[in-house]
Image (cartoon, rainbow, N blue to C red; front, side, top):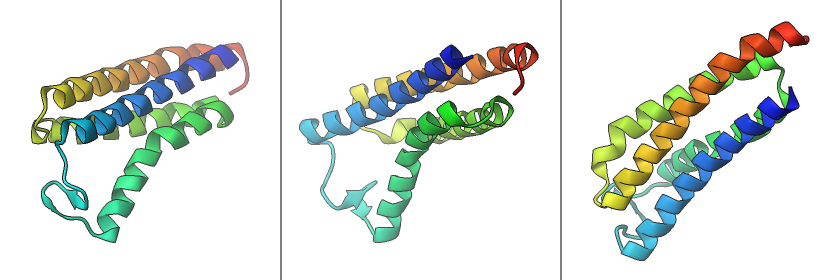
Amino acid sequence: MEQERIILSALWIALMFTYLLGDVLRIFAGDFRPGEISGEKATQAMWMGAALLMLIPIFMLVLSLVVPYDIIRWLTIIAAVGLFLLNIVSVMGYPGLYDRFLIVVGLVFNVVTIIYVWNWMPIACKLSPC
C-alpha cells in the first residue's frame, strides 16, 4: 500500500513543479509586472490567496503519506477537481503559449490523480484496513 501513497505524492510533486515552471518562465519571458496580479496592484490579501492556493499541492503531498486511505481519497478528489476547475477558468488569461501548454499539462496531472485514487482506493481498502 505504501507504493500507492508514493505514486500519489509524486503526482502532487509533478503538479507543483509544473506550476513553478510556469512562474519561472513567466519571469524570464517578461510576462509579468512586479507587484501586480492580473494587471492590478496586488494587495496583501491577494498575495495571501495566491500563497494558500499554491500550498494545496504541497499539503496534499504530505497528507498523501500520512492520512488514512478513505480520507485521502476524498481529499485528493476534492483538491484535484478544485484545481482543475480553477485552471480551466484561468487558461485563457495567460498571454504565453508556454503558459497555456503548462496549464494543460497541469490539467492532465489533475485528471490522472483523480483517476488514480478512484481506481486504487477500493482495492487497497479491501486488502488491508483503511
